[in-house]
Image (cartoon, rainbow, N blue to C red):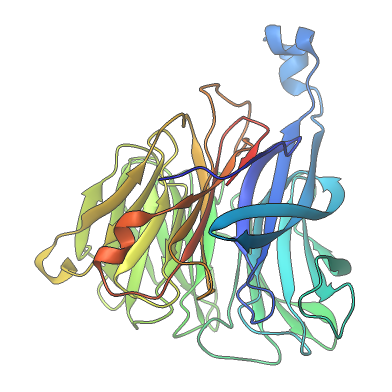
Length: 393
């Protein structure tokens, strides 16, 4: 793998997302997060410092990718300061004809943003404009931890958004008439609800994972006082879930227990396949065009591209593993573009433990040469790690 560029991102980068929409495939969002601590507070571990209200800074940075004679580079086009950003997701479908992304932040707010080219008639413009549309509170004194959209498979003019927060609660809102209307809210886990995700093929079903080591499913048409299933298969906190957008009934989950599981959503007693990746699996992403490929951000063991072709035999194969200079890997995403052949974006950092959830700043774009061994749509990956203030390609 070949490194092309390193960029300082200022705060710790904890979320990176490529835009899925035609005309914007070269747009990369980077969400950042940093806990405000004085050097004295970092050294102390007193009751006063533990209970003192914490301030978390962050921003959303907008980058555009360019290519010149095989050389790739990112250009920062905008920075939007805000409280710490813990997760970002693009709406898979356009909203009123334009790209929209959602985020959750460290003051417990979910926000939606509109993205347009700086000149509406010029798709090739080097800048994009980001405008806030709306926001909704997830509760008092909580951190927003994750979010997901319902419109990945079934397109909708009124998509739903599910969010999770540090008090173990999960919320579902629907975007109607320019507002986020509450659909349901419930206590899903005893501790942090690290992750929430829709079943893209049946969006009445929401999956959640928590620090209580539980993977749960919920039917939002019913009372959410009890889940439709609750799995104890993971032995530590469940922090990543994604429904496969190409193949029905496939679900992948990851945990601090370092195990990547792939499930048949019709039978949640036992997974189809289980592989140990050597690090807590903070993010999992199915390839947007190939149902057999999974990308993971694997905390203490870098990043993996995993082949699930043989899950019927209970097997998964690691195609690529990157862990050079990585201490904590926290984000991963595939680009939807055909234009950049096997370009990979990864995040990494020197070893340094962070003070709270997801804190890093290295994003790294790399050229994944081994992917050509299998027929597949060219793909970009974006991933990020923990504690370092650089963006690298």
